[in-house]
Length: 139
Length: 452
Image 1 (cartoon, rainbow over the protein chains, first blue to last red):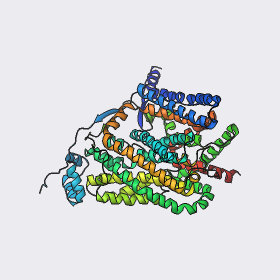
Image 2: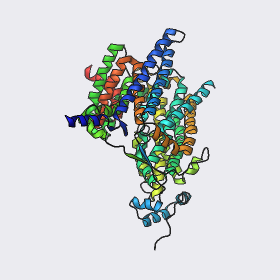
Image 3: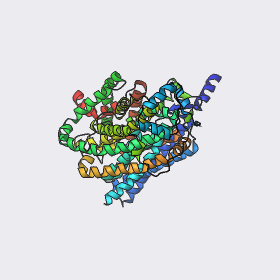
Image 4: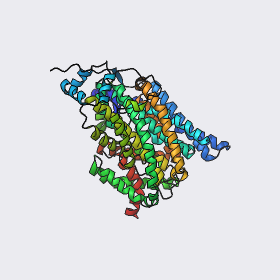
């Protein structure tokens, strides 16, 4: 029973990967509810009010109500973004050295140097412009 | 002139909105472009304005999706998936800013070539329109089988066409009994969000939730900030090498001629084959990302406009996916069941040319400078401040809103049912949503032939 409770507690508060990104399950449930409550009821209410007002054609009234419903969804989305922070740990890489990066891709500097020398003038000029230099050949 | 002015304003608004949507990682074009375009259609805007909206939105998203792809090596949208690996290489070389510039410039050049070629091809194919319309149900059924056969989950996809089509037919009968009419929006959106719903409802079952549960957040590694472009509109021609420019011109024209192919398939096929022989790492990856993004943009333009101008029925993956509301959005547009009454019948060729140009130009004018000048800052801001929960919650609200617009609670229930079933097919069996869409479009004909 204790194990089940512990599992249930951690399950209820755990993170999950949904559609390619990390969410907290409880936050997702609340955000979904907010989105559903933020849009369709606003649409239904606006449609009822605009149609019963009678000054706008029913089809146009439905269109305006749809616009207001969309705004309701977006407002719910903004609220969710304020309340539920992104579950992403951002790590910025420092500036890298081109030579180290080439080696990490499993290519020798000699191979890359030869490929650069054999490449077009346009490409060689671009490499110079982005500040890449592979140093002299080691003959 | 009034309509042109309104189209320009709406197109700029679309471009700005979808620029931001493209920066958010993992946003699928069908799940975003289709519902928002549906809303614009149902608002009652002039058809020409709707066309400009869509073209601007598609172009802007295809430009901005390169930002998270280059900086964090995560796809900004589904069509960005083919070049994640090359972006990852450039990121590892410390050159994510080069990847962004190459992709954005490739997009602009791809649009500039694809649009006139597309209009020419559409004009040449127009005389075949009546024949194609007559055979449309057979074409949809054959298309469903072909797409299924060439998809990774070949045999299960072919097998599931019939059960899925009959499910749709059954739900349509329920809808007709309840509301007096068949549904399109609810079912279409249900298929679009199926993969999301499948993941979410899997969390309700311990047996299925296991693979999804995470105990810690995973770090998201961003490439270094190498400074931004200071010019307002850097010349895309000069950003690309001679070889890249000529290849992009050729492939963008080819994309217009092969408008029935999968955008992702074509991007991979042409992008990889044309850069396979390049040995130098920087040149290979920088060329690949430029060429691939130009193809992605060109296919969106061609696959939307050619079926729309020449036939009026969706005959390409883009047309029956993100651009579907331009073809069929009852009660405003119809294009799937007999009578065609959509942009195809409402706009003349010169209007197609003018308003698609307005849309493409607005998309480029808004998205290109923002991408070149503010990519890193925007990417970091979105990743820090727009949580995935907020995004999914907003999607859920929009889907329920549109389904209830079409058919109240019946629409919502049917949309949810299709999302669950279709999502499970995708998640557990790999049946692509393209197959599901074609089975949906083919379902009336299949049901009629089988059940009478």
